[in-house]
Image (cartoon, rainbow, N blue to C red; front, side, top):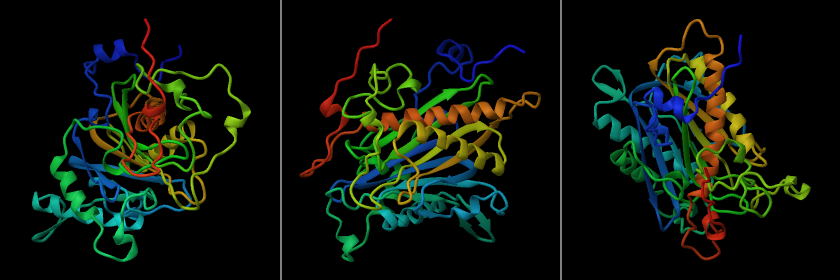
Length: 358
């Protein structure tokens, strides 16, 4: 049997009717993304809303995660599908965001029906952005965190087009040396299934190699989507030494990968597990003891996998990992620095993208 490519090239995508990809997670039909942030406190919320409940799974590889409704995603749990997934800043204070999403969706008649009430199923993960320079009196016991209200605003604004960088859950995100942000990327597998990723990059380490413009994810870049710098001619061994941001617990990269394939909950969990390879490719280091690095996986179930192709599901995993690596780099590449004293610079403050060449 001749070898088969894992991912379609651009001509193949166009031939399959997917030539108009946005390079966003919303290339998976049936989901929308909304963002909202609070500039004063430098925190925000990102919500993925599914048009119909989606099968979902979760893989946590960081040592200190912050989540809500994560246990119900395990394959043995009763709940079969979710209405939305939330990524939020605010550390544990940000877990109020899922309640805001539930309110907004219940008002639309969404959710698990129990007699005359509805309970929207909304898993969530948070990242730590409490020390990025924003004014957060609620983290000192004064007033209410903004995340519940931000979540309602994010649901109201949800659509298929959305910005990247310093928006939503990525608004207050940072890495060890540069401003972090919200990133996304998509592709189509050889079987015609859409796979995509969305990530809030708040890494303990670095998405770039040493002190230059090159991203660790460079081998996976498509069409100059994060600057077209490629890999450096040589990598100084000092660039391989781990660099850590701030003090303990000041990080966490949280992500969602999605596909239009039909998956079981067990398959969704496996997809999330494999997608972590992309985090390991794009960040150095990742999955540290005091971060909460995790990946949700969601399947809208629009297209069955071919029954006679044992590699079709493996292709989804390979594509999800590649998309997540690309999305991480895009989140940093598209970010803008916070308008706060002592804020980390953005990639674009220091470097310029290279022109694409024929």
